[in-house]
Image (cartoon, rainbow, N blue to C red; front, side, top):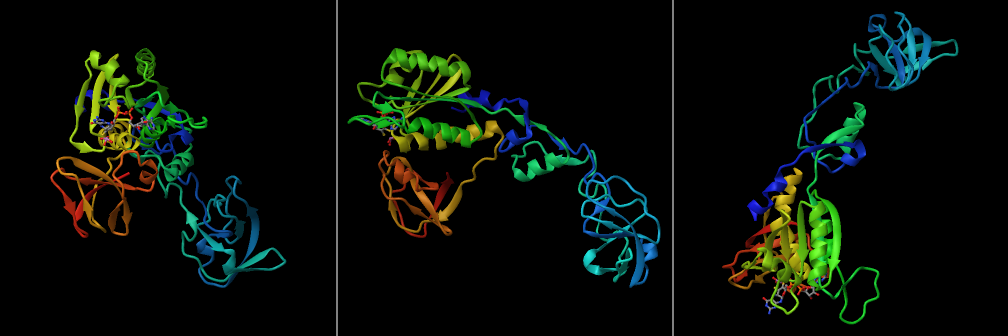
Length: 382
Ligand SMILES: Nc1nc2c(c(=O)[nH]1)N[C@H]1C(S)=C(S)[C@@H](COP(=O)(O)OP(=O)(O)OC[C@H]3O[C@@H](n4cnc5c(N)ncnc54)[C@H](O)[C@@H]3O)O[C@H]1N2
Ligand code: MOO
């Protein structure tokens, strides 16, 4: 499996508009192209002064001008004060700002400074946040809103991000209909398609197609060819067990696919293939099995390809006892409860609504037959 999927790990970079970079991974170290702040400015609404003229307080000074944020460069006249708003450029020659709260004004254009400011008081120096050419964000950063803020502040409109692995999903089974369809007996909504697509997208992939095929071999083969024309990896669901209508097995078996029974539950029936040089993972159809298969076999590789950090397993004490089928590694659905974890009742691989209440999988080793409250279990966050 690792060799089959290893081409996904070789990735390039692409420039994207800043807002599209949210959740993407920076492909390069980025340096600040400008100083932040780009000019010396006031941190407060107040009065810009030169501290040489305000060594004792109170002292009364003539107010020479009023500066708003957005005004340009001005020159300070020693012994005067300039009314200044937060973010306005400090007049050249002033070296402190006295907040309005520490002043008293009269009607004659004078301000009395009540407390002598220290040099630099309430002044935001040029480059005090970051200097031009200094490291801003390293390659590998998963871009969040705070990163967008810094990138926008230095004026970047596009950033280089790692390309996302392109994923196609095909659900198989003649019983499947899309959401919104009227269900007749025997028919069910395709949930694996949306589930696998969502899982892939949530783990850094670009989903290029989500398709459905009945049990007709020609139709499935055509949909597979379409999927491999655009995707770097294809996930199928269904059609891999021991029934009469196993379209995935029927089409891919003769093409050299390998179908195995993995000693795990759910997710036992698994297959791998290469179609048109594109790796294909064939997951079992039961909805919980398909999702667990994704978590175990696909998520680590997709995250690594996308440059996202690996999901760290946790070790948590069980809040309740549980029994486990020996001989198979079990992935039970669970929910964190404070510091511990609770197993969600019901082992059936069709229990997808119950799975929606889980936030972890409990990874129970094959040789375990039961666990008591307080025993530590390995937990995979979903
Ligand atoms: N005789 C045996 N029967 C089964 C075995 C076995 O070892 N011997 N294994 C069981 C296990 S475990 C699994 S898992 C399933 C896997 O079967 P398939 O991969 O062939 O899947 P299907 O038969 O197509 O479907 C199984 C089940 O899941 C529903 N399903 C399928 N696709 C979707 C979808 N896209 N969205 C929602 N639900 C889906 C389908 O209707 C079936 O109920 O085989 C067991 N049988
Ligand atoms: O292995 Mo099946 O995947 O248990 O339901």
